Picture 1 (cartoon, rainbow over the protein chains, first blue to last red):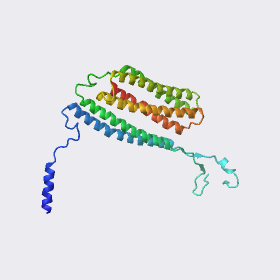
Picture 2: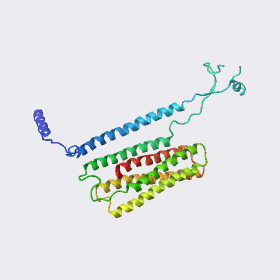
Picture 3: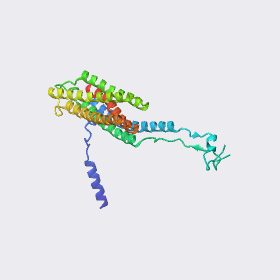
Picture 4: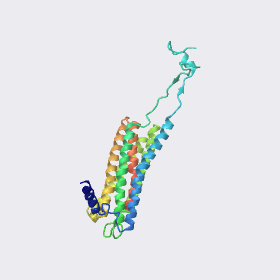
Length: 87
Length: 196
């Protein structure tokens, strides 16, 4: 029975023909085929460029925000009330 | 002098601002989807153009007004420049910010009105959405951009209203600028592809 199913699957598989789902892939016009390739590259690179650019910009901004903490002069810390540290 | 238990001096932590405000993040995500949307339209146009038999623009179709739209393009770019300087004035609390923002809005409005007049002329010449590939792509791409210009125009009007009432924060102004820069930035590419 398994062998029969195997032969059936093989027979169905051999019936499949070339799918013309993409009108540009089988176009006789060279310019059209080239346009298809160009737009595929374009649509691939645009999101990658956007994501890469965003990460680069975010890192640059994060670095610019990394400011050193402000040190308070010691003479100001001495007389801030009963909870301040005294020498 | 070491003041805390670990021997470090007392320090006052600097006040930190958010790395990316929510409004800006939301607008960036929105603009990214818009970039992909326009990329899809541009790709479809390039494929359609390369598939056209008899050359492009197709014979027997009205010619697109290149010079007039070139002038309109300059107006839109000037609007973006005005917004850039308005932002600089806003940061410095310069009173010229109102004039610059208003100039940006008026130039954006001029672009929309001019485009409308151009469309009326083209429809009279016989270029419609169903008259052929040129008309279909033209009204789809340029019309979609025009819708974005109208939306950006409304956003800039809102920011201007907030500015006049003294309620405009940079967290509102920043996303509005991102959207307008997108609208201004994508237009020269569309002009070059569709008109030239």
